[in-house]
Image 1 (cartoon, rainbow, N blue to C red):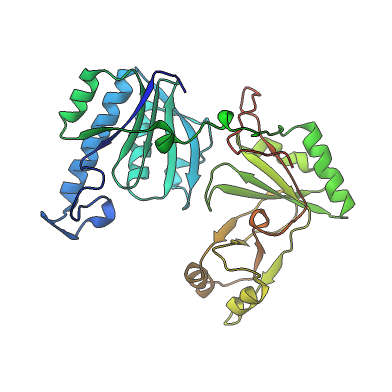
Image 2 (spheres, rainbow, N blue to C red):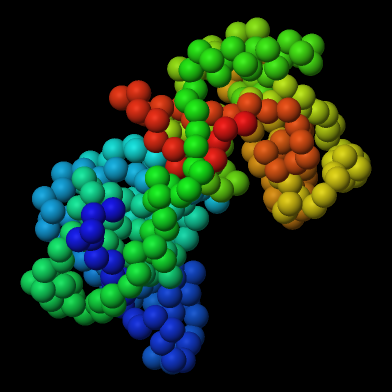
Length: 333
């Protein structure tokens, strides 16, 4: 972070304002001190916040932004496709991405432009900003929209840059990593290896692959830049047939509640060498709804990332320029 970067929040109401105030699209239709929140009132407030975003982007002459520190606590919208640390969006796409974050889709990223500007949205209608030398003219223009600006602390809004974390080390995905994955599979006599690609924090921030233990590097071309890649050679899978006993079968296999260790249900276990069509479950209600509509046998396993000591090897996929950008902390196992 530049020593001249200053952090502030932009909002339509004061943080911690007295009384009950609305703060999200889910509040539409609810009663508040100034009446029932209508959709038109909500959209006017959202538009003002995005006008402030446009002012900030224009202030640094941004034609694009780069994604930083993504998290996905729900499935990605179809239009968004994949996201990962370092993915670039044209400035024309930023408004749609911002609305996704504001509207409680539970997808969050930081937006950054060349170290001059950082932006992050919360679902409570706050926009966190870090700007290099913010001028009074820019702040006044934002306040002229009817918004409020509050100075804040950089780390509380954007966290600590991983490069500043002592002991944060990682090794790259490369020939040495794949060689060790092959050796791990051979030691356990495994035919296949399960590969987890974590491209974002959160329950939905992963992609799973099943690959031959003797040629796991075949999956390398599918991996997103900057993702954390973990190989597991001893993942216990079990099948669940449709019917009234499906939930019982899953509960009998559980060692801890789902909110402590997610259940991964796979619709295409098939042969090795494919990306798994996997869906995570962290609660019984959503699992029951899926099982109620189940018409064929599915394959399940519990997330080895959160479980006991399952043999694994992890590394970080370099970015498209071959540079290792570690956003995951200590990745050295």
